[in-house]
Length: 421
Image (cartoon, rainbow, N blue to C red):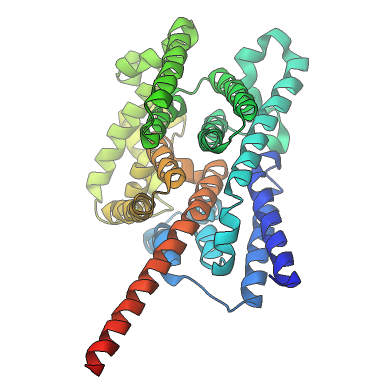
């Protein structure tokens, strides 16, 4: 490797490190982190033989391109452009990763665990600093107010507890793979201890959706390892967590909501009842325009119009659909929903084919979480989703392209041989 190639590699490595450390940066600096990452990729690509993966870009940005197309039948263009700005990561990261230099993919794959450790440490550090800071002001009330304080009392570091819970879940997911590959028992013990600290923060945030989805992805991770001993240990950990949840009244009440689904007017305003009523109103609206929806600018107005008739309480709260699949269907109809599902299936199929377990579990985690939250319509959700899917799909796409090239070479050789004969 020439010195210039080493410098390129270090520059790209640095840009990836700061992207995985993104939780430690305030919201007003995150666009600059992304811009730096994109400019590094563009600079290195331009210095090599310029390449652009059009197929990958088109598939991975297809839902955003369709959103732009829906402007043609959107009346509320102010809201539409605001939404397109917020969700711009859905086209920015596919573009960046389509420019990613092929020669660097295999080399940077060796640093994958280091990047995951950086994200794990960043999430842990963010929670620790936040908790200690608020502990000095609220002391005994910290366990009650911690979720709200993270949302409203941290300035540029404000983050909704549902997204902070998701970051913790992803950090824990990364740690599972790191623990498996670490050879030192001491390091394994330290990582497991830190995992329990993160699980503690997850319990304080008291968001049941991410906890349930994490349990499902953790179980799948255990099954992927095909190791009975590890499976038994993992199941024991899950049982301990279930006992903790059921023994604390606040958690027991939260999870018991799942068995009591009712209208908000008669059953009370719980997160489960809210979603149940929103989904009913959303389906009514989808039936009115099932094929192309109402456009990215008008879909929320249409939902609120339906909520005004069905649930005035929820109308006053200006709730969104609380389901990413429903939101895309309201915006772009069944065409939009199928486009997004094709994007997920394409990446999942390749991940399964090449045994990319991190990508498989990320897609499952985010896919399940989107069934109860519009995670792609907030920056704290869409940035991480787009970046993680883009990065962890890189090596899979690289392997797939090598396989296709080998197949093409074999076909060409066969054709030449047949011609000679």
